[in-house]
Image (tube, rainbow, N blue to C red; front, side, top):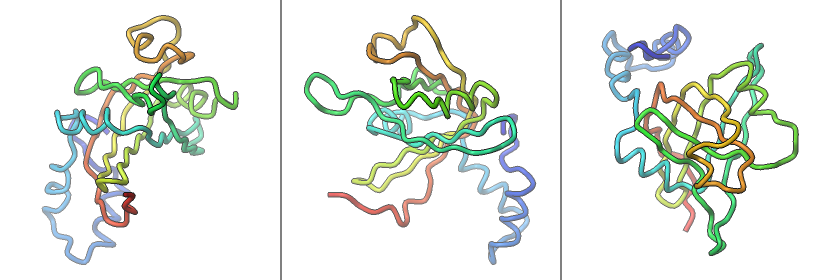
Length: 171
């Protein structure tokens, strides 16, 4: 949702029904936690995480969730999974995989996408929602991910830190 509208009617109803402490100003207070662009801290976090989860849906709303990571670098360590090209612009590589094209197929018919970034060591979690589209051919992303077949660009519409409770901590 863009244009200042933070919650759809179902979210507003759930906030009211399931929160015993709900009051008339709660939606406005919660809405202030949601940004429309990544700040510097969020951008650093996104670029530091080795993987993320991508949620997409087809034209009928049937959902899919995929794990997205990157190819290891020459040093064997995980490469960059996402590049923050601007406060409202993220790119991530698409590598050859199982050839089902679940996420890309969904993006072609429904550009809404949700990205979930989790760092199990620090127990931080960030959510990004936006509009995605597939980038074919050459582009600025090619130097970062030379083994990628294509890239996906996401225009950020919502970004917010998510509660860290119940994230299992890894050493």
